[in-house]
Length: 414
Image (tube, rainbow, N blue to C red; front, side):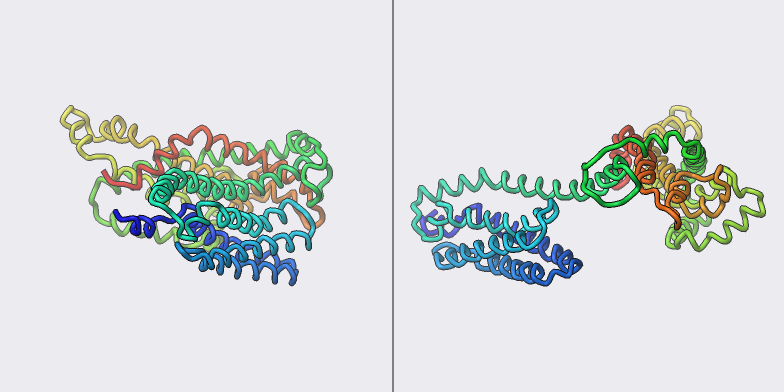
């Protein structure tokens, strides 16, 4: 390979990384402009728009080999981006959120300044590279590329984690703060009065008992119907099979509220209002189509040869299902069971409509009663919400292995 070809082929890893990161930075800054619009801060909105324009210009004008003038322009643009971020920061109140917002201008600008003025980029932009320098640069690129990609991926994931955890931190702070008001500084004071009040309330334990009975009953009854139904749809050809499967899908297309009135009339005529059985039947009917489809998709992946081998060994069809297919399908059964449990645990509308007595309220309806038009017990509500979420979190923690296997195994054939 000639020296000229090696020089044409080589570009410092900093340039490759900047081109990738600047695209993400522009997208984030455009999204952050919505906060300036909501705050009606015209000056900061102007600075933000100017910052986005400079970021786009920097991405387009990043230097190539033997283009020192573009490097100089890029340095000026990087300094301007960092200056705009600082101007935005000093014009508003210094908070953690505002620091994070302006960091999307300050940090890219400072990083661009640092990398564009570094020795490898300066030498490359001025074309003063020997063969040995190009070889060293290619080797350096190979060593740093994976580190830059890993760093970028981790930064992205950390931001998603923080965004996910922020509501939980806010709810926890409200639950541990005195009084029942929203707002205030996070972590300014702590108290356990809200948790003590909720845990010492007879109504909360009544709601918890009702939710457990309904959710476990829905889970068991739903699995009892969905497991054989999913296996039958997977293994047998019968009249109306395709129509039934299509009907299951069609039912899922309609919002649940349109069947509220027919449900209520049926439950009233059967005398199932204000009863656990009425809610269990209603939830099973609602969740059954998706449960059947989930189990059918997993049963399709179980090799038929295993069932044929079991038949040759003397098993009847019921034994084939219970001793061969069902044990292999435990991950999918766990996913379906958890889905049925959560569907009943979190449901609000049907429980509110079918139950008119406080003694029959489930947790979602009971929690909603804490927030009324005459008073809002936000601290109690936040504490109760965390307590209600605890069983679900524990279920996900204990069954995560089955969940991963069940969700992934049904996505492939064979």
